Image 1 (spheres, one colour):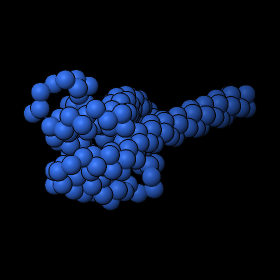
Image 2: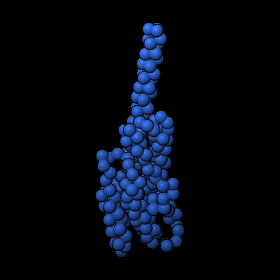
Image 3: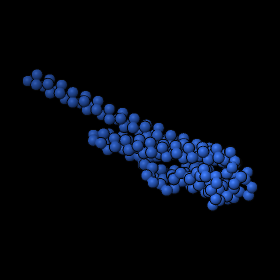
Image 4: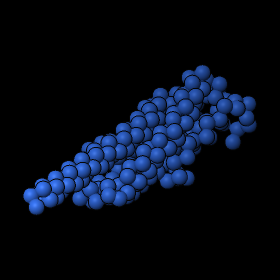
Length: 206
């Protein structure tokens, strides 16, 4: 009888130990996945900030063109200021779809304003021929490409994290420790499409 009791106790202890180890591994996996999402989000913010940092030089270069449309410059400047007002708590990735929607809306307005500025610039041959303006166009195009890449990487990190939070038995820990699903960037957000940067300097004015 004592042997049976000892065996049952040992088996019970082994089971508890296995559950505990498994629970720790699952929790650590959730933490790691969440940190991966936050890291990917930091990269997203970095490339968007790079775009914002290009704007002062772009505006300065464009404003030097004679009779350039001032309302376009004001639109870009205002949109850039709006982007700076969108702050997420703690600098981490958005927790809700509404937070990400606000971020996208501000960035979308800036993207639209930049698109309009570049279209208007087509009407100024001297501006298009400026090496400084052409260099800024190249930098802007490269930045927009990086934005697309980093948004995709963010979505991939979110997918891995969300999948982990929904798998059994990890889902029990996720609920217990408030690991909530993260929102995705929309697959085709029209307001977030990269501004079209034209390199055809012989194109007719629009």
